[in-house]
Length: 123
Image (cartoon, rainbow, N blue to C red):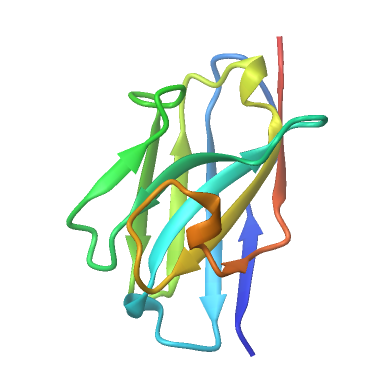
C-alpha cells in the first residue's frame, strides 16, 4: 500500500525555521519525483518545491525561493523541506506528493498525496 506521511509542522514565530519530513512506503522511492505543495484556508493548493529522482535538480515557487530548500534521502525513503525566514503568509497545510514522470509544479501531474502537516507562522 502506497503511503506518504508528513511530519514536522507546528507553530513558529515569523523569522523562525521548521523542517518538514515526508516518509514514503509501499514502492521504490527513488523511482519518483517528489514535491511539496501547500494550501491555506480559502485558497487553492499551490506548488512549493520539487526535486528529481536522484536530486540532480530542484525547482521552487518564487514565493519561497531563497528561503526553502527541498532535499531527499533515497536510502531512508524520505523527502525534506527546510523552511527558513518563515513569514505569516507561509501558514498553510503542507502536503508532499509524487509522480513517476514529471518534474513539474503542476498539481495534476502528481498521483499520490499525503494527509498534510500544519504550519502556522505567527507575526
